Image (cartoon, rainbow over all chains, first blue to last red; front, side):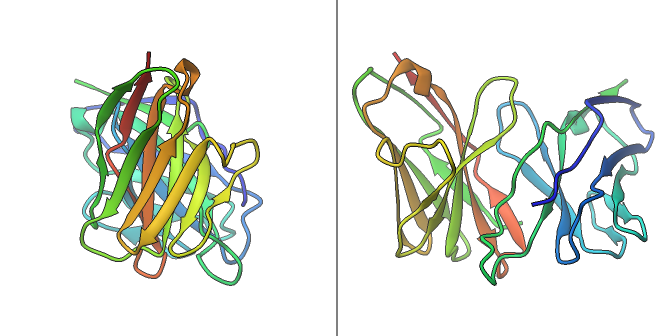
Length: 114
Length: 115
């Protein structure tokens, strides 16, 4: 599985957009980009995933560069409850010999401040 | 999203005893489940991949005889920590593949303290 690089920590003002970058320069053609977050002492929460097109759901938007070597997770209006560790993970789909497992890096600790 | 539930949420056991943690997919069938361990201030570490009806696949360095995994049905996988020691104290988290494996959902986690 390709590895990802994320900043260790970021701050964001409450109500503003939080833009979390992720580099995945060795991503393979069939690997998806997944984002999860983990609030202290809880299991990770699925946020969004994409292959090459930009994606949006009720939680966030995912912008993937055309060469797919990097992506940005956007939380449009950050709240204090968005304070968490955010993980960017590249993952091959389940099947064809792949288990589809998620390998976690160190993630970005996002601190949303009042 | 799909719901994955773990039980117990926390457990304290004596050194040398065994403890079982259950992972259930409540509203979908999961042919594949994953078990992770997380120590304080560290990231999640994948321990094993649990496949329904077959043996689990363990990551390098994880003792399969110490961490017994059983995935007897499409909605239940169990992790048994055998002969637990204080260094096994950790946060254990399971996850399950949903929607043909496109999305993986996680349980709430189980805190194990070995005294």
